[in-house]
Length: 523
Image (tube, rainbow, N blue to C red):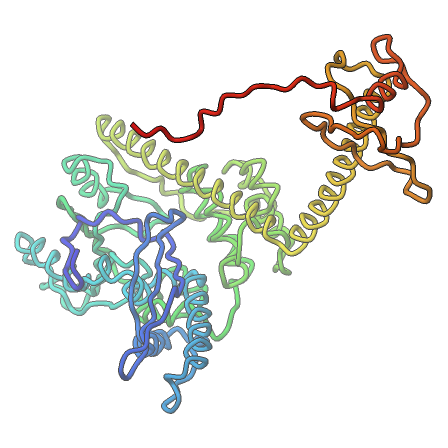
């Protein structure tokens, strides 16, 4: 996809919750500025990565846009003079890498549209507010009673979900909120079943769920209309935020972090458990933590919990977010309702939930649910394998492990040297014993004289020399070497052999006749 090309609504099946990581690979200096080459990766697969090129001015523009979050981000300062020096560029590159690490590891910032567009312009270059407005206008061609008052820009965290303030033409003072969403990667229902399900939502009646006034869908998106609550959502209540403010301003870095009162925690928690399925217990733990402490947990599982308004709250949190709970399994809804935090909460309404779904649609929903769970389980396996591999590589590359490997290598080298020395000594000893015992193959030629022993030499004799091709002929006047005690070789004493060699007369040899064919022949 070309840069700035708008993807058609509903056609990009990306999971926007998959985190992006970024690493600056190199920098290149042009005439008046420096460009940084950045490798961006989606998820854990190295193959799912790409390169982008950014200048410092691009980082500065992003940082200015993120100031609405109220965070102090570590962007390196500007420098007008000397900004092309090699040392300065290297130092700035380190600072920009640290900046990228901060915004990609912050859960709120990493999922916002500004950061996604900066790191992945090909997939996030479209203006989704414009796309949503076009889709909404198409929907209301057949529903002329609705009118858009204004877009509620960036009040939610989802990139492909947009909100608009609405009104009914014959009821101009009444305000409603429309939410539009582009379909994501988990649409496993057919278009017919999906549209049927969405149109059933206004018939859902529940005492603790805000009622849907209108709902419709097409092959690429869906929209819902509800009454607009001036107090906002439960999250707005927790963060003491204005519902129309942007998401980053409301929730990223609130000025005052304070949870709800104990009675609010008990009541809202009890009401939520009345709609809840067992599969959502872990998510309920996240919500309860946020209601209690005014912020989400830093990481899960949670090893220890800060002081809470009541130990009954901590007991529920431990049963849903602790290491033991994540390892051994979540409690059931009925078990949570029996815990002290919720067991004494009396619900004032007697209205029963009502939501009728056709049998055929129930079966389609069951299959779609299984497909979604299968995808999530596969992703979870891949993430766990990647984490184990990363931990192993990190442990293998640690300073302590490197020292251990060096020590082991030195020990192995010493042991190998000792073994080689012992093996050599054993081989020489066997060779020396074999030569002395005369147990070798039968003697076919005279042996060379045994060298005399020399005083003061090392106790360890030198290795024996290789046998010569033939023994040299000694003159009669050559002085015989010091004799060792004669040893028998195949029944003949060594002294007799030496005497035969000493008494050898050259004149007794017969003259040999040779034919020399080495001279060149001239034809």
